[in-house]
Amino acid sequence: MTPTEPQIVLTISGIGLSARAGDVFTPGKGVIAGVDVSWQALGVRFSESGSVATIGVLVRRPAALVGGTLTVPVHLRTTTKGSTANLRLVPSGPSSIALADGSDASEIAAALDPVVGGWFREPLVGLDGWYRTDGALPMIVGPAKVDGPVIRWEIATGLPAAPVDAGERALRPGMADDFTMAVSTELVTMLAQGHWTPVLRAGDPLPSLAIPGDFTIAVGRPNKTDRGFEVPSLARTAGRCRFADLRTEAQPAASDGGLSWKAPSRIGMPASHKVSDEERNALAATALDVLSAPLAALPLTGPKRYQAQARIVRSHENTLLLDGVLGAVKGRRLPKGPPPPIVPSATR
Image 1 (cartoon, rainbow, N blue to C red):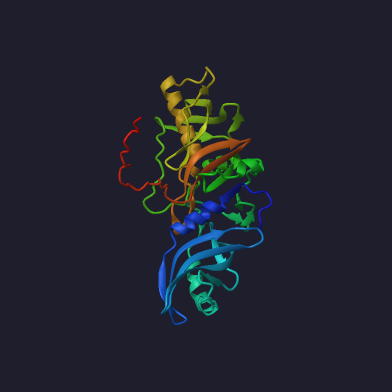
Image 2 (cartoon, rainbow, N blue to C red):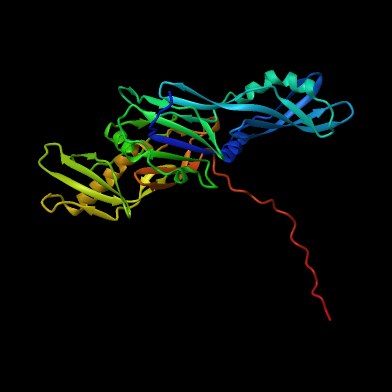
């Protein structure tokens, strides 16, 4: 069932996803149709009219070694299990090969078809959702759609939170980003209030929350301001003899690949609430930590289950937008060559 009011909209760069899929593609070789064939690189071109995967191949014949391209028509398929959703590529038709020497390779292409399906078994993107001791959070995940240069995935949850209200332009990933994950701030609040925890891989603990003294903290829905968000929170001691009604204004930020907050620009509290300045500051910081906990580590993975990393957090209206990558951040290393030659100066 497709959610009519998505609380999460995941938009993925087609170029970025193709690059990530290529990064984890496993080269191989075999005897296909009686000749040695090796496959070495993968790229995907996503299109509304029909997506195709292209794989670089080498065909070794008695007379020569010929390079070429194997083209496979593919489509995106969403598979769900419990609160987990995966986005996969599935071959949707017979493949074809174009060799550099123009020779016929239709027999090789037909023989490769049973092999090609195994190259797409791994999910391209996984959304693992949230859980707590009484079970996983129900989610309604719609089919992924190619929308121009991006892939769009809409998700709703079993929580009665407002939908994403960001404009279409705000949802688009930047040129250096693989994805933009837009989440309704009301949904973030309800996840925090319900103590929903993101599903993480082994060895990825959530940040601990250091709550001052014997206080407990409840957060409310953030309200957009000119300088970020105003986050309401109520802190009470165990015996409820002391309490503080706080209004903390701060800007969202990325930290350790997830949602965090910059230092508060303002902390409001009625003068009648008797807590020290030190306690007030600590309670305000903890309230921001409580609110960011459901997205402190993103329940999102790229190819080969690589943990997605948010690099920038921004906002539009009452929606948080996390921009990031689905694979390791790699710097391009230029090869070291010989020093430039010394050219004598011209003389008159």
